[in-house]
Image (cartoon, rainbow, N blue to C red; front, side, top):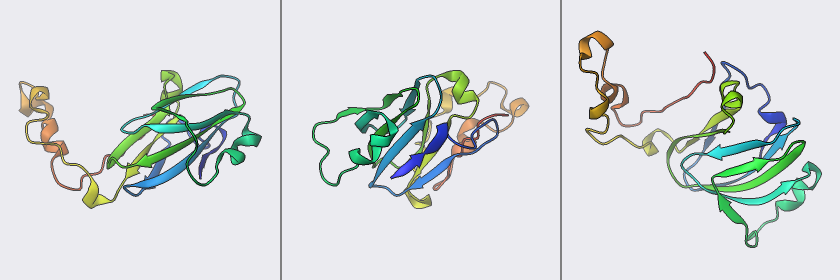
Length: 163
């Protein structure tokens, strides 16, 4: 399992959390929350099965081989104060996908990261015209248009929190 200890240890403005996984890889996540507040954790691009929520000492017992029974499938899970959430994700959607606390202040403080699913050859390429409505009227004054920034096969997006 991938354990995200102590609320994204080392996270903060300017920190970079990138977890690389292969397309189709099944990953069990144990999210530890050492704080006195609930954290609603949200994953973009995928849904996960919630195997358990509660006391961290019982988390390992939730990671049994085989089908996990009838767990609920979500994209956001409340990780309780001083507790854990145990999730199972099938990363079958290539690309960079954010995983973060839905509390905006916590996200701004670095409580998030990116799952980079697949290698360079697996990364999606935006179709032509996807960003055409976002082009500034005076392209020369504002630099290259967004489509030029996103073009090219194998482009990888890396998000860095803080500033």
